[in-house]
Length: 139
Length: 377
Image (cartoon, rainbow over all chains, first blue to last red; front, side, top):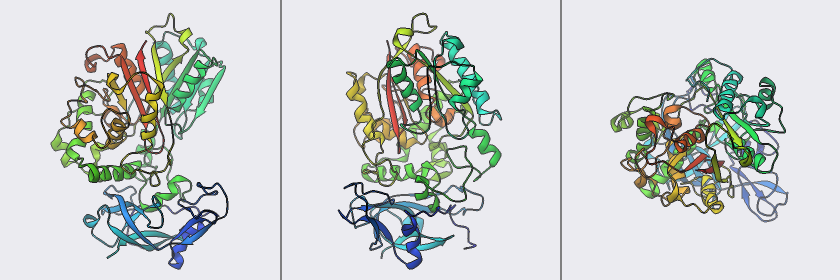
């Protein structure tokens, strides 16, 4: 575990449904669930395809690129052990499907450089037994 | 309404007893007239079964509801209960000791927006934001506000009118938490929480109980106050109830409710005289103003600019008791009582002029929402 204080991060409870997403980063992969019948991507992972209502959903490795749709620079220290430095929380959209989005952090840049429509790519940060998919500028 | 405060160190059941007995007496009823009960029951609040037993109620109908549809779902359910003949007088209530819990556990000890302790591991919907340092609904709504600013040129100076106008209202209300005037300078110099939200864009956790009696239309003769009528309700949900998967990141699921509400009435947005509109964070209020049709999509910034329109003397007075921003986080339960007082002409120093006849109440907004129209019958 890093000793540098970062944002307040509470790790997810791993389940059969979410393990691929949360642990893919340990192998350097961003894995998004996809329907084997109609090819619709789903995030968060779900038990039945929202489009065709069939089962048979599997994790698929995606490109790892994305676009910032919305963001906020967080200043409030939500926990006494969290950083007092501002950090960026963002909703990014993956190019694989319209509206396929992840809530994440934008890292490895000045918080003031983040903007809507900014191209970003995934980087992974270990947390407990998972790897968080964070995003950095895709220069 | 019970006593209200930032930290009363009282049990939510104790607050609920006070709130419910006050509401029953205010309606001109006694305990024995109540034959139904419903509660919004989350961690840190009193449940309906507990209150039925505590108050010695004998009910034909009761419901204990959590989030959905919106925090005021217990009110909607009670309306359906009296409409379908299951009960004549339903006491509905919500109490919370969130203020005390937050004060006692300190920073990070409880989850923002609730009275529950911070978990070690997270599952369910929060699983998708708590690993990313985004524990507050404010983080998500701030992102929506930021996108609204990007698309429509909305400014912080426009958004500031919501806390500024409401603080003025709170100065005229004896149960407000904050009542000293708020200036634009105060707002622009305030500590940032999650941009574009500063401290004054965020509501404040408190302890309270709100209670309301919902009566069947054929059971209202002889009551202490003239009955008010529920003209329409809506809690439609036709899009993804998700912060990040919702289709339009410049509004929220409240969009569906805003559209649906007017399908159940001949009234139009122009008929509304007073509004109680969810203000856990300022941008929710703006999104509701658009969703309910008081202005067009993207136009809420211009609509509230300068604050005149939404002030007590304006065309659409909002949150006339200060709302959650100045009178505390009632989880959506402060709006209906305040709108009722305004329709009764009992608003005192903060009374909306010219005898308001139609009020709108809108609760929640982000991933669940509900709204209702109330009229003088």
